[in-house]
Amino acid sequence: MNLAPDAGQFQYNLMAAALRFIEERRDDQPSLEEVAAAIGLSPAHFQRVFSQWVGVSPKRYLQHLTLDHAKRLLDDRFTVLDATYASGLSAPSRLHDLFLRWEAMTPGEYARKGKDLTIEWDRFDSPFGEVLAMGTDRGLCGLAFASEQGRDRALADMRGRWPAAVYRQAPDRIAPWVEAAFAHGPSDREVKLHMIGAPFQIKVWEALLSIPSGHVTTYSEIAKRIGNVKAVRAVGTAVGRNPISWLIPCHRALRRDGELGGYHWGLPVKRAMLAYESARLES
Image 1 (cartoon, rainbow, N blue to C red):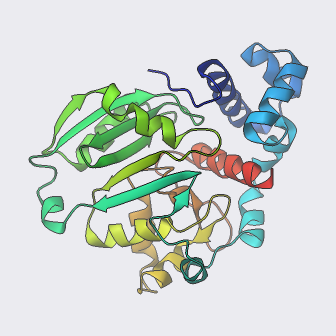
Image 2 (image 1 turned 90 degrees about the vertical axis):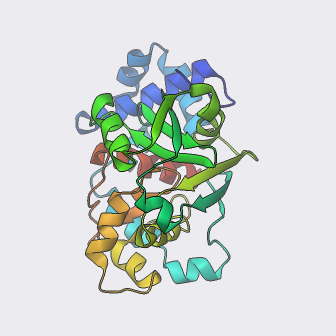
């Protein structure tokens, strides 16, 4: 199933394909003509549409994908989470031009591994490849990216988190939330999140929600924010187990030395997300 933001399904799919092509060919430094040809547009038309949609030129976006981009982000856009909270950006907050409202599962509910829970799901297009979306009657509970793992492994991964739940493929129920999650431009649509995790994980994910788009923080900074400065490794594990990628922005957590660190759905996806957000912020 394809989703399209307000700019229209055709343009959305073209630009999503362009972003993926640039990421996949990053090391080859593809020219404007090569990217335009790959998606079937003239160079001039592609340059204009891409710049309007992403906010910067294709050449500038490619520069954001260089290997030292994360280090530059850490130097220029490092977020100290205590200051972020003090400035009123604590969750629930307006992120990705959306209103996010989240509800966490109780520890008892989490211990039952999804028993008595119905999770509806389907696959959708996104700027970062195919995304597997899952939701309950309380909101989105999963966003998983399949471009690196493959769709079958991504589905098995997500279902393995809540093995006692009942799963039902029902795209119409969760499609509006997914469409809003990846919309290009401001939106006043509310996206509900149902955060299913252990109490420690919920604390880490709440801290992630406070990181503004286009900025980054470190695992050690998150550990400090949740009151356990020695739990850096446990924080990294909790970040990696985040089930609602992109909206709970685990891609904004970096190692202290500026390296990307890990990413559950593949480092190319993380790099593309950071480049996309950084380019939009610059525009």
